[in-house]
Length: 249
Image: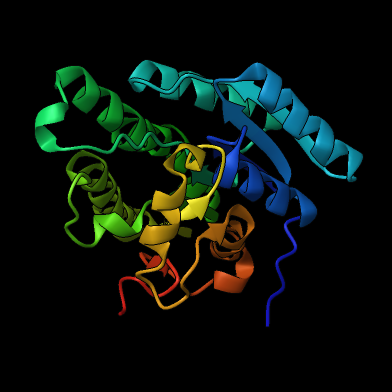
């Protein structure tokens, strides 16, 4: 069985300065990848890079505020200039405002779709054709369990990630025949810096699943790392629930 040894590969992880994205970056670095951590907060990004390097890994930080095609393509150019050919792309950046549909204005709508849909779309457009030319590569998109079922207050966030799930399958069909695997992970409630303000609401939401508790960022990251590596060599177009069983129950 193939092992997850990613020595000699370069991985770009968006949203990598905290939470799931940071845990993914750490996991990929532990397996030998040169990890490029992209995010808005330079202080947190450089701290994450230092931690990876101190643990023996290879990492660099790229500041990126993903909001449109231009910013996505600029990040792709910067990643290739710094790390060479990008072998793995992890679209972990995301914004998740909750609330009734009527509470969101056009600015909210545009901001959510810009980060959750537009940025991954144009990062794939910028980086994956070169992967296909080389005949190898992997993309892992990070979604959410509420892309799979209706939930009050989740219309905007859930619909954006549902779009990303469909893109995952479309890209698998488009690029899979040329050696690029595209898959997604749908996390359930996860305890991170971003979900800390939810407080007990996170625990109540997690209690609805068989696991009965929130995930750690590392538990979600382990699934992403699996899909990024050769151990998942025959996995194409999958949307893997890592939600404590919520969508199965």
